[in-house]
Length: 403
Image 1 (spheres, rainbow, N blue to C red):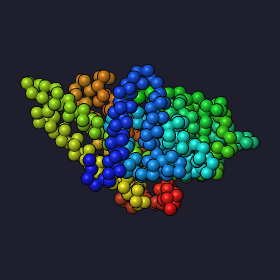
Image 2 (cartoon, rainbow, N blue to C red):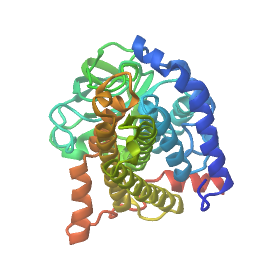
Image 3 (cartoon, rainbow, N blue to C red):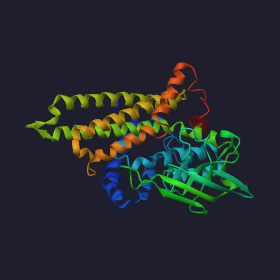
Image 4 (cartoon, one colour):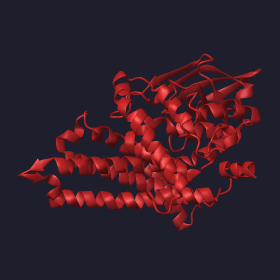
């Protein structure tokens, strides 16, 4: 228990731990063996309130804020990060885009069901030719055809695109306008033709929660499902994505803690020359380094979440927290694998796939190098990281609704 946290936050932590230990951990390996998407577990998580911490009660959220969201992500990442793979799509980027950019009717129609886990969400921005510069290299194009748009192109790393009921997708409506030519659309793949999501085989990652390459061939989107006006898509998505760095950092913290716990357990169980390997100084050095890095990452993640809850400028601190936590997860996974020896590469041991997720968080939601660029350019005075402070919107809207 963190003595600086309210009893409400600790109650949230206890809720997540109970949910994961009773509903997810006992069955997740079976879903992985069958490569089956755990739709019923997502619905249970939604019913338990695990996706709506930063959303107001009017749309099915709990309005508890970013610290609660960080704690949820941390514990889900610690106990089974494979199931947590859909969290950012289900409880952050997809509903946030609709909530921030949609009409009242769109918000009412889609957001509550996403937060409740009744519909599966996704958000697709990245393309094969554009990762850290998605708007500059976007080729996917939406052509207006009467009362519908017809979208053609290709998306990459489209997580949950093979399962989604409702998603948000970015496409150019003006090829010559750069970021101002990008428009956001609410997409419903099960209702309209032209959507072909192909899961990408990923080393060590979940076989039940898949990322995809997405092919769009005259995929139909009614005009009424456009988010905002033409050309506003990139602005909407950036407002929704910024908090994602914090939730990814929290998940990375959870993975680091899981690696640490596995390493400690194994170091006490495995014996060499008549004593546990944890008695050897080299193992103790690794354990100590892991413990120190985890506490530092925990402080950074909680700090930026609290800053966001107070409405303070958070882009710089979010970049620092995301970079540090992902570094910590990667370091802890590497050291835990070394402690396990050859067993650390065996699929039957949890550490084998924890290491894969540590690598993923190092690049997901903004690569480590992008985070360093944000931090350094701010420090050098080249570009203020928090120059758009006040434009993220979600917290301010929640506060207005509470008045």
